Picture: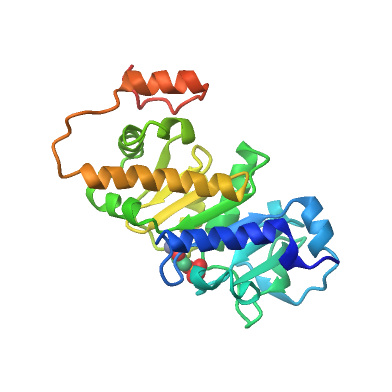
Length: 271
Ligand code: 13P
Ligand code: ZN
């Protein structure tokens, strides 16, 4: 069995957490990442390991039975992931009955997966139905996006339209827009179910007054999505109190979508 710490997926996971911290998105224990391992990676680095512990999931994840995940730990700081991944992250298999995580590596101080695991795994289940290649779900607290949820109406179409207008690349990077959830109690199955439901129609889900969820096929793709939403939110926050002299029109947004061949969310552009 090869050393997990030398696997490319592992290094990328730690580097992603590090970047998210560096960008100020993940203060203290804020944020969490889940990566579903490729079969080849699971074979090479994980499968032969003995189960260290069984950790109850608290919900039914049968649709992911036998799948392997690397997930950040609850209460753990992204700041520390790179230096001590064996404490701050863990790798587990979903048990055949979908009730437990079979811990194979990590959480070495007796810890466990993020409190937001319901939202992560339920989102994986939904995204896989839309895109069988989806592997990543990440939750984070990007500063400007969070600020924007205090001053912008929390309507999915209005929020998406504003973000699309904030930078030319937006409609190309997230043509399905962002879904917006009202404030809800975090760490619960209820917010998990609501997030997963929204993940059917978009890869980005805003948790008002809390943060953002992003999904993608790779860590880079999910990170890039969050990065682009956050950049657009920053432009919004930098300009929100100023008179708007110029804007990207709906016709121009449509031109962009047509030029890049993306199918954008319906009902938002008045063209
Ligand atoms: P965890 O420390 O359990 O991952 O929670 C962090 C967080 O962002 C809650 O929404
Ligand atoms: Zn959070």
